[in-house]
Length: 138
Image 1: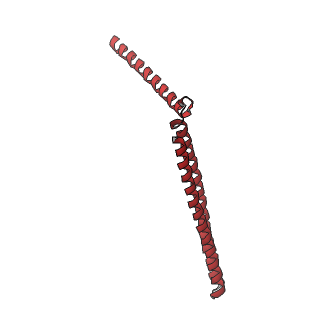
Image 2: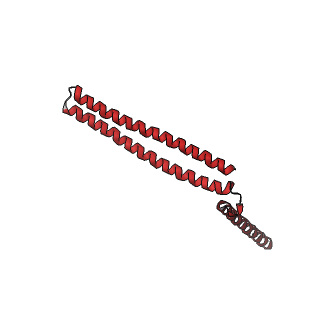
Image 3: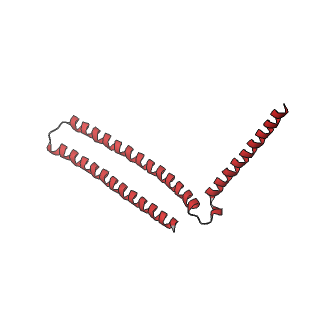
C-alpha cells in the first residue's frame, strides 16, 4: 500500500538523521577531549606563566560555551522541524492515503471552505443583481 511505503521511507529518513546527529555529537565530544589533552600538555611540558594558562582557559571556555549554544540551537531547530514534518505527514496520510475519504478531517475542512466560498459568491451575485435593478429603476 502507498501509505506503508511512505511511512517506511519517512522512518528511514529519521534513522539517517539520528545517525548523523550521533556522529556529530561524538565529534564534538572528541574535540573537547582533545582540548583538555592539549591544555594538560601545555601545563606539563611547556614553561608558561599563570597568565598564559588563564588566557587558554578563557579561550577554551568561550569555545565550549559557543558549542553549547550551537547544540541548543540545533536541538530547537530539530524539534521545530519534527513538529512541522510530523504535522504535515499526519495531514497528508489522513487526506491523500486514507481510503475512507468521508472521515478525513482535512477533506472536511476543505469542503467547509468551498461551501463558504460558494455562499459568498451567491451573496455577491444577489447584491450585484439588486444594484443593477436599483440602477435600472433610477
